[in-house]
Length: 130
Image 1 (cartoon, one colour):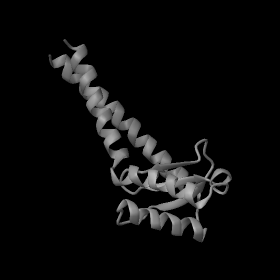
Image 2: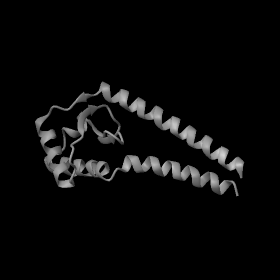
Image 3: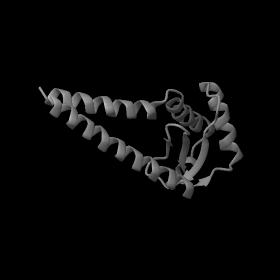
């Protein structure tokens, strides 16, 4: 059974290093993105944050993404938007998108995803050790 624990610790260590590198790369990429200064979008995001019940509104950034919008950062979340897609949306559509992304932040989905990853790692190793 000691082999199981060594394997589990190694797996968690690898996952931790992977998560750390991914977080550092995301933080560096975020520095290269331009902060959104569009009044309309910032006001809409603030209004949606109040609807969702967020006390602190995350920073909005313009980025080059495959997805039109995403949330990054478990501790200090930010929203990255694709300018080409976002500028085509109406206020109603943007509200729906912002509420969706802000709900991810409010419910701490990014942090919970990391916890799930470690729990899943534990489960996979423990069931294979039997």
